[in-house]
Image 1 (tube, rainbow, N blue to C red):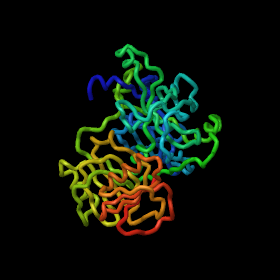
Image 2: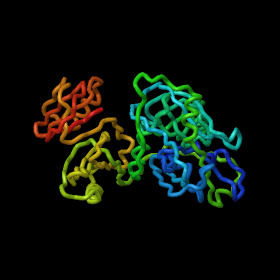
Image 3: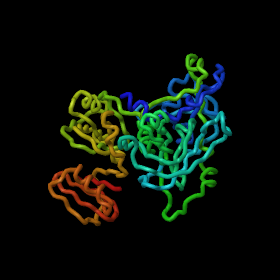
Length: 402
């Protein structure tokens, strides 16, 4: 990481705030929220990394931390007989300018220690240097907000509060950039949960449902949001100085390690297929070949597809995708779902001859009229559809539905 990128952002870790550093006091805090009813919470990796003990206020100590440092995400497990109310992940794509609400525990030692709610909107559909894992938001956020949910006006999860432009950046460029904040997309967090075999709930608002007021949203979502307390190492606790944590948004490591995405198909150019293998063997085959940037493993037939590029992920219940961490910032999290051996009769309005699956997918995703596509590999033929009929089994057809 360059010295320039190192100072572009400051994480919203409460270490920036500084706690009274007694051994039995937390050294920092952040926010987390329920993503399953049986005790799994989601937060930022930088909230929990380096902690000797992690406490969820009012719920006791957390266990089994699972960290994705590349995307600044972490999962924590709390025990207890009381069922949690998970926040539901939103399926619909994020729209530029739409309203949102952030909930968390900012400045907990200075302000009231209760949960706080702020409102804003989506400023941009990408983060620093067009990083599509993030959205830029105008919602005012402070140290302690890290890891808190960003929800839409129906209460569905759009993102996870992560970072803000730092004062150091403003001093260096000579411009005070006001209220420039970033949230990790909910779709990135959903992939992380799938890689840990933890299921999330997803959905969308009913058609023509009116927006929920901020007060009603607070009543609905606040019970699912918790303060995360970090009890740090002795050398961390020894300093009483408030400190700023200069950091960039997480970037993918330069190594060839693969990021797994269960329930997804990697869309790219297949250069080789290997039959009758396990997922581990498929994984190893890609890691052993320099040109391999992604794989799709078909769990039903045990077939491994090695790809020399990856542009998007498409939902497929019979597949597991893996892609090079170096491609993490380039991969589009698609809302398509893929089905093998299925078709939707009718609704065809355009035929593309001599095409491949990637061209078919790209043609549909870039056309607002397209609701689905059918691709026939044997004929290298793609059909774009503007309406959805009744699905039926169709051998040799690859179906993609928005």
